[in-house]
Length: 104
Image (cartoon, rainbow, N blue to C red; front, side, top):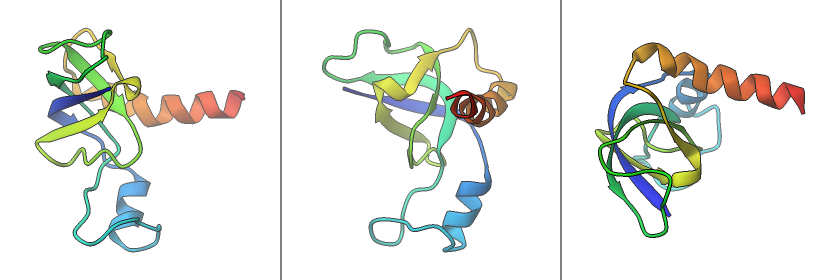
């Protein structure tokens, strides 16, 4: 299932810049959503989602999740709870993913 998240903070990274400059392939038609990661509050939880509930604070990183929008809907597997909404958590999303991939 999916969750819809009301974004409070979003990250800006090289992928976002390269997509908007046309350096990365973007599927779909222009205009397209930009943004991979964000932190906010669950506004809606979809069918089958058990680990996340409306009102919880979450961080997420998932493909092109359109995080620059006010709301982003992402697969629940790409989101996890955080103790509170802090902008510094954003830096952990991409760097943490990069570190975990380097360990594989």
